[in-house]
Length: 599
Image (tube, rainbow, N blue to C red; front, top):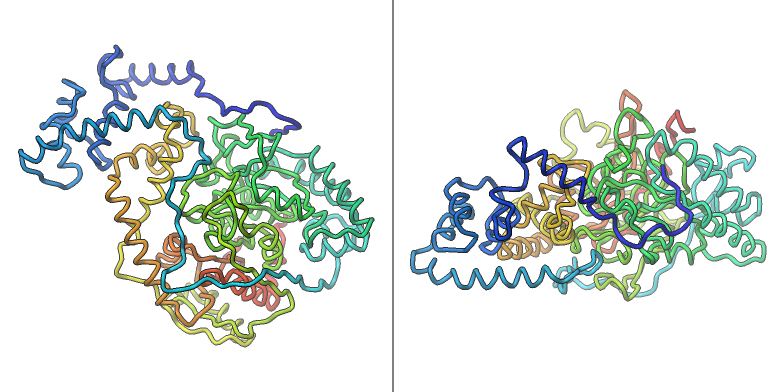
């Protein structure tokens, strides 16, 4: 755990040139590494080779020896180079066509080199914006409204462990009644973060000075009768890809360990305005993948010998262990859902375009989403109510109302379930979820997923956008500083994605448009679809289409670790998904169990 109380540097950590040189020298001595041929000016290396092939839209893979030999002879793009490259992308041009292409490909390479001279910060998005709304549908209109439920059975303020695991409505009631102060609550959570954070490896930076100042201000306002929101005075934690002025924003990655972005993310600003108290910046897997970060591996509170999954690793672990009132995470492809499942959190992945990503690390501009990780579905609704809506800084955000009533039931909500996902004896516990909903008045109907489209091929969209977001990391060689260096980790994915042709990336997005329309038709007539979180291609499909999802525990395995179910809403039906989740939790109580080591 590192602690910061002020700015350290406004620049990302550089690649420590001496370390990179030593690594590369060692690789060359062992007959491997990046350098090939002479190191003299104009000599060929792998990165020059990548630049040459990228002009041809070559896909990733092993390079034929003859092509490598030809490029060692000359770095120029020739007819022979084009002919060999065709084999890698499954194309076949005539000799005349190859000859005609050469000059144009050389021009493209010059254009690439010119573009690489431009410094493009991570937060700068492409001039193309993804919109999940199918053309044949219109968005809801009107104003937002959030009405919390009335809490019962308030915890004894003299019992810190009970307070630490209280819901946000319970904490809000204690604060408004002045049975506990925000300063007392903040110190309680800071103490738990200091005590349990190292064991869970879930804290990057404590924001203690900022938190104590915010808590004192909240107490003054509450004492004076000024009530900002249901979150007023409640401590929370931010996934460390959200910028917070004066504190490091590490993205969980060694090359950015000392990075300070002198700005506050919109989500941070809005929670400040709601009166919430930021107590910590929490871990994420390096550059938002997995649960391994530069300081270790974040742990599952139910089984600290096990990782928490990721990439919102610290946000899920800290919320479930009672180290914060709630946390903010992010999801591109499972980064809220997966740690929520592993840790037994209640996680919400909102509709794409509901929450601004301004000030958050960009990984995939057309798939990134921010959302809360909590202990209760209503908690997630209250947090979403505070952070949602346009800010004029993220062009993808739409002005769509969010209406939440904590006293509501399932009236008017049409529930479906993913057909085939509940079959077999191993799904008995999942089928019990449907039984609970039926007893609460729902009549679940079967729905399907589009099955004619090559969904797995669309993963390239994420990898290509991520490679662009971290282009400088790859070209500078600083990707070698990332902890994970396996085939499926970011350094290799970034490098490989550079060889996806722009034409194929756009074709993938056209297939994505077909998916959006087909899923809209398949789920017509239902508001919320119940499914095991990882059934079929549900996770990939709904992240590509931008649908919201709530994930929560609905039981425990024999080893005491949680198992989870998901409630996937229609587009902009975050409130309906949360309402089904809240009703289920009220009828069961699985979410109230606490990890024994932290209660």
